[in-house]
Length: 82
Image (cartoon, rainbow, N blue to C red; front, side):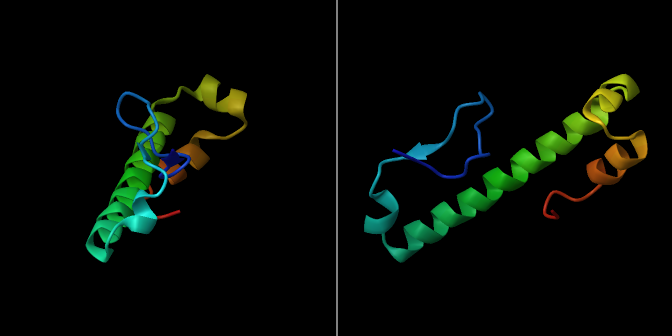
């Protein structure tokens, strides 16, 4: 089985997987839908991580080596930006 995206997870934290040859055997519309799902899951994971970063206390941020200003700058980015 193949994971769509190494960071993509369902809300239960389980990786999203498809049977091995599904993408290669699928027609163009199915591949396009799977690509859209890849993008959506990556954006959702990025949004979730940024919200979690904003929720960290100053002490926790210090433990991971970033300042509140850096956390706020990263956390305020839109989900589609890197």
